[in-house]
Image 1 (cartoon, rainbow, N blue to C red):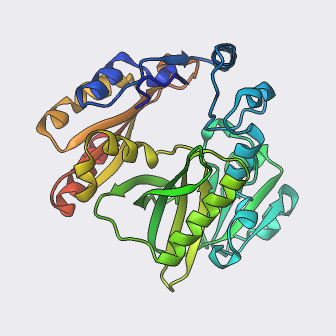
Image 2 (image 1 turned 30 degrees about the horizontal axis):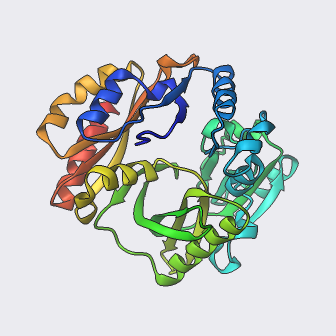
Length: 344
């Protein structure tokens, strides 16, 4: 969707088979894709862009390259701070915060007992390669601490909420420094508490107070110098509490399908539609070939993909992000689940 905007991107996302599928559905695929296959190549692409006199809008902080800030739309320090899961404490009104506290690695085991339910989040300004550093623990289940607890020194320990509705509010800040709402999406969360896909189009709107707070949060970030898109994860609990759970000041897997639909099928934003990500241990071209009959039948769009085989990543993994749409919500859910079972 970059069109003629220069885009520094992983070579995993520029697979010819993927780009062909995206063009077939009418997406404005970038004409100036500056791909990289390794960290060294990434740094070279950034240096080249700066030498070309371009301004860079980073989606993740790049602490190893402070010179990016010289030509940046926003600083790496600000991007890191806004995406740090500890920053909710300073950016979100306490009324909309779940009970939470920051604990050190030494305090972690005592602060997070096995007999209670809780959520553990990484407290860091570092991007960690874009990984989602969240661990959900349910009372009575043996604790198996995730890998990020060995890498970091501080963590956010948050109460476990029983969620009735879960939204991803998509917002943006333009050059005029004003926060605006792009769209409201609903979120599907898996058994581990991790984002599994979004619902678009016919969604239940959030309460006005929650929407107002999300606009206020985004405006606070804008006042600090942030420009770009963000996705704020929010919820209403079974007992009626409204909470802002996560701040994602970047383009996310929830905003990509939304941008795609707005670009080529805005009509689908008034109909049932859900996103789903399929993952296989093989080439992306093979996955897309297997999907061809589903795409030809209609009701399915490919909006993104990635193949680690085109990078220096030693683990072969390919993903394709799809939007499943139709006229009836139950039909959309049924077809999305069939795809998940087929490639799960």
